[in-house]
Length: 503
Image 1 (cartoon, one colour):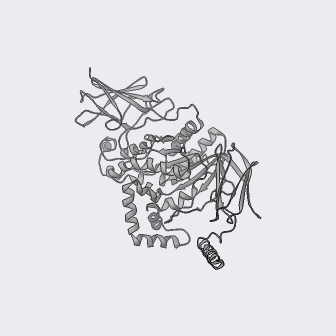
Image 2 (cartoon, one colour):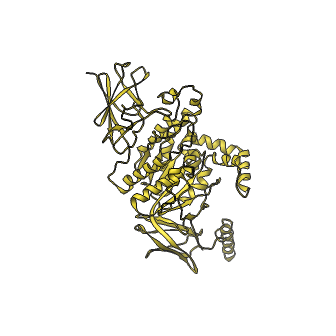
Image 3 (cartoon, rainbow, N blue to C red):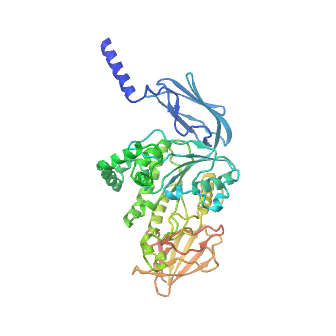
């Protein structure tokens, strides 16, 4: 009997040792809990880490505390009560004789900013953004180390710094948000150029997305690819560009290393600027409309927060390589040519979920540069959306958005929301509207503003049925509201209801 007990005890000890639970006896915190961190205001704050199994951990912040008994595997998690914005405060964690203490902790608004190269892109070559860098503010940044992993990780490389995010979009968003709410803003920047949304997806999403299942099946079967990834990761120091691109264009493994370890750090929401890597082909762009909402739901599940705010940046104007082959810019405005119009439409499918928003950027971009420099308006628009959706400010945060269409005789009337002060940037009639009838042939429309509506006609169509607005690679747009925000692109031949009255 005693021998059996000793054997079982020894087996348990070896098992725990093999998993590193007895080796890691020192008090340890999740990667984001470090000096200079910003904690989310007005929200329960989950704190987690490791310690000696069965010991007790107590967390203390601003007069409040929470305690928890450590699990047998050495992990622990507890929750601090809601806090008002402020600081700096002392944040202390104690377990037995061990203590970890941070003396410069702020409480404010925390946002994760993620995506690919246009989120990663810096601002030192953009004068109007660089000029803001020296202005005193209250912004702190945790920049996640760029790496990958085959398995979901607990920890991530990075540290909180009292500095602005190196990303042009993340910085301008934080700057204008902090300027309006007058409280600390913490940005967790986790982004990597060339990465597809599949690179940021957990493996379990293969159960709901057949295309992702096929992608992962091919990835798993490619032994040479795994060997190369291991080889790249084993090299110390900076990676060369070729190896870096190889890592960031793989599925799943970015999520494992750069997103999974962040949850469930309390934050307000996620700003997502990504989609370019998923625009290589019509099928991929259409698939994105199914993938994005499901991914947002999965991220919310990871954070254990159904109302995690999600804001996507619509892809701006761009003339792809296909369009560069044309001698005329006319194709850039075509509503039927293959273009980013389709990925923009797919991005807007995330709006079927609550607590989501899309920053319209159809008036921005560069036909020859996939990394345009006009990032400042994007940060301004994201900050407006955050103010309205998370602070319930009564402000106009978006441009005109299609409400309904009314077909009457030989014209179509477009009704908008956010249409106060409907006007154009140049004083001319609205542009970028196209009409079609049941032949599915599209013609440019003549457009006139009538109050909060736009009336469309075309002398080539006697009975118009459908409208496409700014549904092109790089349309020439000029329709805005009184806050100078651009109208959102749309097409009515698929998604929007049409009321027909030919009497």
